[in-house]
Image (cartoon, rainbow, N blue to C red; front, side, top):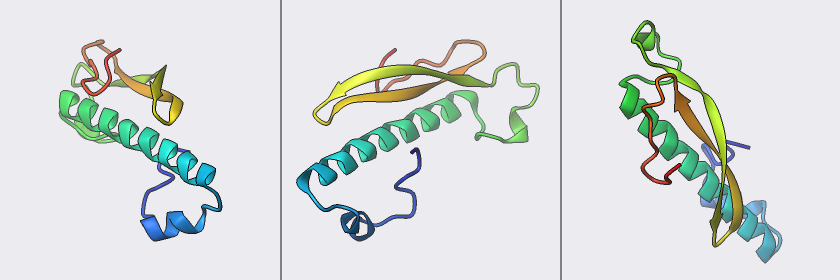
Length: 97
């Protein structure tokens, strides 16, 4: 469900909510998607190139999948996909390993 909110406005999201629980679920998804985008930006900064860029070829370090982590928030437990790099140098700043 990553990128669920991409190109949607609050008005669009509100149309999909029928109950307070729906709003809370949207907030949980927004929280997750926002954290995921921060992880990707942090790793991009660490590696020095954007995802899928050929600039990263033969640099000695590159993206290497994801590991799972569950965090507790006021929206409940949220499972996150923390990106990894081949050298193991990337340490998330927003939520520590």
